[in-house]
Length: 229
Image (cartoon, rainbow, N blue to C red):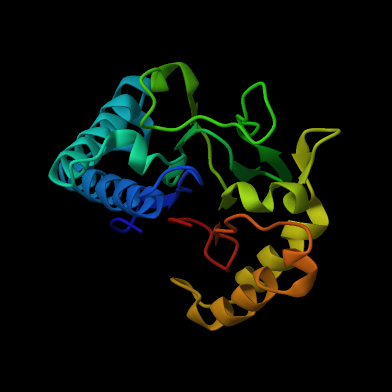
């Protein structure tokens, strides 16, 4: 959350083949959060976000990674990571993604996948924000309407949470989680975190994926008619 009117949600997954991928994904999230906080303090509004601004934010991440890689005498590719992000205000939202993972948003009563996971033309392949041609693989969607609920996830949950035949969210995966979140007090639902962690680490889930399983959930259906998620 940044301020009283804007929610920032980010998830990033490091490349399995990159030696400092965990550090890269952490740096991506930290840098983007810092840039968005500054943007919000300077009067930034979701209604004014466009692709050019999103590219500027990602350029800041890339510069941070380039600086860190130079300090460590490594290359940016050693810090390769994907990125899914959302900036959500009261009546508009901006979504952006490079690589796999997914963003799911509820508009009115429908859950939609904003961008289908970008896995490239070969199995187990994706794109990273450290790639030279990252702009070609940057997906941006500016939505000029209210978003009621939101989920961001990394690629380890794709097979559980998405219907690949219809390219749609798998409702039975999301609805119980959103249902529990709606009953929680406003703000960070710390009381629900142990249950979510236990579920994502369960044998049933681990049997279907051995990849990163980061999941961010947010709802504004908690009794408040207006305001941030």
